[in-house]
Amino acid sequence: PRGCAPAMPANWTKRALTVGVLAPLAVWLLSSPAGANALVVVVTILPLWEFNAAVAPAIVARLERGSDDGKGAAAYTKPEFSFATVVGALVALSACFEDTRVHNFALLNGIVALTLLHVVRYELKSVSPSPATAAALVLQVFGVVYIAWTMSHGILLRTLPYGRGLQVLVCAVVWNTDNGALVVGANVGGRKFIPAVSPGKTWAGVLGGVGGAVATAVALWWCAHAGWPGDGAGGALFPPFSLAEYAAGGAGLACLGVLGDLVESVLKRAAGVKDSGRMLPGVGGMLDRMDSMLVPVAGMYYALTFLRESGLSQVMR
Image (tube, rainbow, N blue to C red; front, side, top):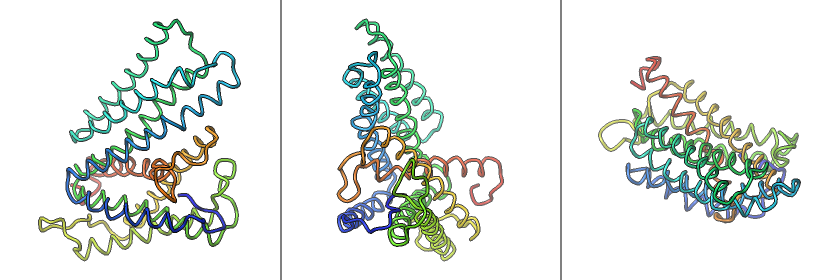
């Protein structure tokens, strides 16, 4: 969660307007399978494009400045970064088959294709690998795995019982983790969380984010047991887990969101950039908005899949 600094951001109005427009649009798209798939694919491709167009090349450029062997690596590897975005898009689209085997097969083949492209270009241009070009390959594979593969689990969530409700749940909990962190961190401030990685984050902001997540999860628990809203087919939208399970799940998603946000902070500091882009007014780039969603989406899918296949949960059967 971002915004855990001791002063309210000057772009608060722009941020509120951006969220006010995008949140209802996301809820509307999630109301149908095709809309949900389209939403997940878009919010997978755009952050990956930002990563491969700005963040990762900047890391390579900063690395090559410290090594003569890496001279020109940022420009040389530009086609590979573009290809990595295409690979990530195909990985995201493979999730539309709603089969983890197809999804993982697409990921594996994408990694192989990226590696072969590097090897073939080295051979054709008679260029020797350098630390910077090797780092470029690692970053490209990382982007496909960490952004495209994790985020596209949002499509696979719909294959589980109460799938549409799970999609809405993870979006609501993670978004309110960010909101709680922003409001509490900005007004309370206090001791820094991990200043070496993200100087603006405070413990108050992190705890405010967890509190926002738990409060949202409890509200959704009430909705689940009140039977509102329905799923459009006479059933409940949200799974009937217990209050403790909802609260624990909300806290867990918040912690995973913090992890995802810190990973992006590490990458941005390595690249020497403040934001991944300027696509969203008041927020920054799409990756800045979606970074805290990546790990929770995949983590929620595999946690619930484990509960379902192990028989530990009657709800997920």
